[in-house]
Length: 302
Image (cartoon, rainbow, N blue to C red; front, side, top):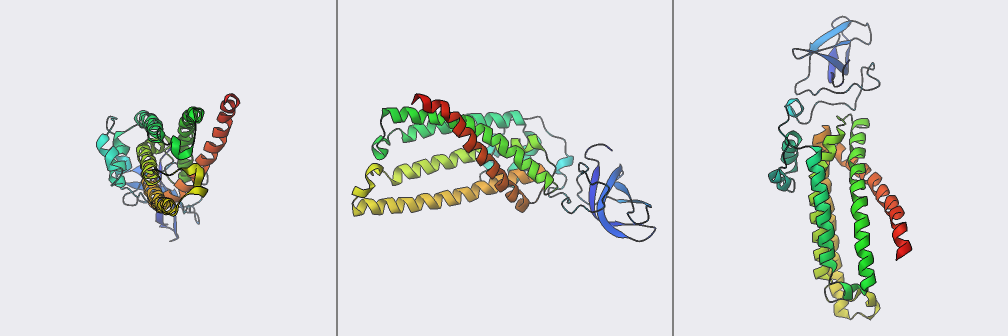
C-alpha cells in the first residue's frame, strides 16, 4: 500500500453480517474504497465520504477504529495541483485580517524557500528596528556605551536562536498535529505557512516597543523609588496599556498561527490551537537553553 492511500469513514456497513463500524477504506478509484469486515472478514466496497482526503496509513491500520482521523476541514484543497511558487505580498498582508483565506491561497502558491527568506528578512528588520527604537533609551534605563554594545551582541544572538526556535516550533506543531489529531503531518508546508506568520510577530514586537517608548517617555527606570506621584501615575497607565496590547496581540498571533497549522495539516482550529501551544513550549525551551549556551562565550568577553 502506498502513502496517502487510505480514507477514514465514520460509517462502514458490511453487506454480509450487517456490522456498522468506523475505520479506513483503501481508495481503489472511481470514488470507492475497500476494506475487510472485522467481524466476518467479508470484503466491503462502498463509496468514499464526501470531501474526503487521502491519509498516510497509521501504524494501527488493521484496526477499524481510529477516532483521531477525520474528513477534510478544507474540502478539495489537497486534491488541487499547486501553482508555480511565488512570494505573495497580497496574502502576506491578508494573513493579518483574513488568515484562513490567505493560508488556503498560500498552500497552493508558496514554498519553503520563500517562507524562510521572509523569516530571515523580517528577523533582520526586527533587530534593526529594535536597536533604533531603543537607541534613545539610555537615560531611561541608565545604561552606558558598554551596555549598548552588549545589547547589540545580545540582539545578534537572539537573531540566530530565534531562527532555530522557529524551525523547532514548525516541526513540533506538524508532529503534534499528526500524532495526536490525525493531521496530514506536512512538515515543510507547516513551516512554510508559519513563515508567513513571522512578519506579524515582528509587527507586534515593534508595536510593543513603540508603546513602551511613548508610555514611559521621560521616566528614569533606574530611580523608581524617587518618582513623583505624577510619574508613578504615568508608569501605571503606560503599564496597563502595554499589558492590554500584549494580551490582545498574543491572542491575535495565536489565531494566525493556529490557522496556519490548521490549513497545512487539515485539522480543526481548536486542535491547531493546542498544537500551537504545545509547540510554543518546545520552541521556548529551545530558545532559553540554546540562548544560554550561545551567551556563554559572549559573557567571557564582556
